[in-house]
Image (cartoon, rainbow, N blue to C red; front, side, top):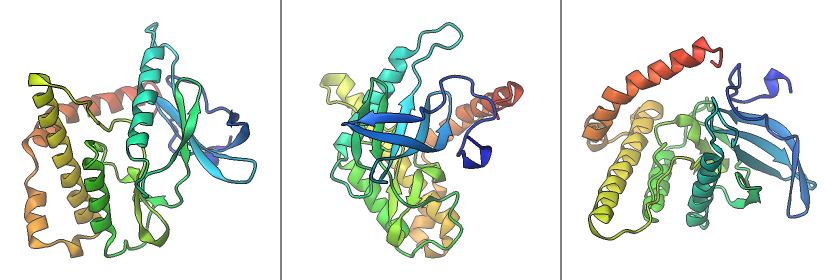
Length: 250
């Protein structure tokens, strides 16, 4: 596949196989149209079915790395993301789960639109109000999106409607009693607070003219745990990027 037909694919693949040229689900054959993303954990592609309908296949890698068996991790991540899509099945701005392929791949409906990184024109005035409503609806299901800081996870669909994709690291803790249950509830509340903070941050980046004084003030008050993450996570992220550049994967 030519480089121009690929999405966000590193120069060198460190782990996992290339996206399959085709797959069969419920007796229907889907052919690869475009690779959207390939990273250490999974490969994602857009496929076309026999009637021309588009779907997205996300295949979690199960291959070992440096001799470490990781098949269990691929299956676990696929199970988690499938559960997240099922919890949000009736929300109109979340892709519909179509089914599973094997033990570590899932298929969801294709969402038309462009992500915020690719979108160049002005966003509708009500875009971020709708996005916040969508995030709060996800929270009402006992879930945190967690990956809200990435503009490429936010799509602008037909009519300027927002949609969210990629629930790989979202978190929907199962109920627990006692101290463990309390810890889970506090962590969930923190992650949900971070989701809303990043909605305001995206609004400040793409439509600062619409921010109210209250939103501007709230946007300046980064939660303490995000400050801690920046203190610890930023050096680790920079080290990871340097390693990927060193091995030729960036």
